[in-house]
Length: 209
Image (cartoon, rainbow, N blue to C red; front, side, top):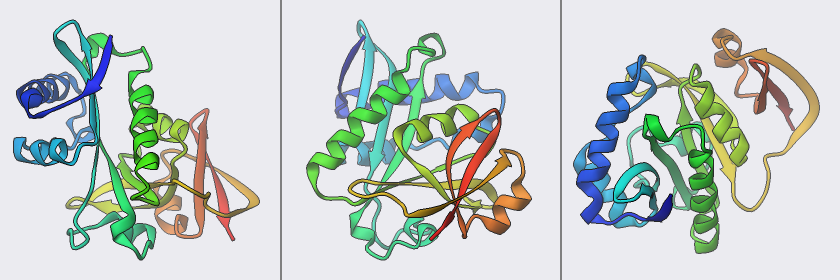
């Protein structure tokens, strides 16, 4: 397996991988697909890497720099004032035949290292479908925290997750264990709590200071 940056020459391979992954999903709502033009924009920004098995692209992960005036900007959900210091953790694809090798998290660590080294950002934000346990576990492994649970993208339930690059999110010691399917509690209380980990289908929430 070889890791390398992706270029515009890889655009067709990225689209083919996205289609293959999407077709393999039982629950299509798990994946918010991107257009070819959107991927072209991500590639031009330079925060996208791929994993190759020989000549075949088997995995990719990217980050995306949103415009400050973007509709439904995640900084608004996270109550971050300086949107110019925000980058999104974007879409990840793993070919079904290449799963189980930790590629998603390895690519995530590499991209976070690059974002940190750039010095251009203070926050990485992303959204996760609450029922997507593998994606939740991946984000927690990388240090992301749930800072809000809300409706996004036309009424879809999503966790808004945040990674502070240079400092942590301050919380107290009071912890509440919440089942990952308890959407009612999360929608009502996520403004006052930060979700920090997932174990045995329960998310540990800590009260904000």
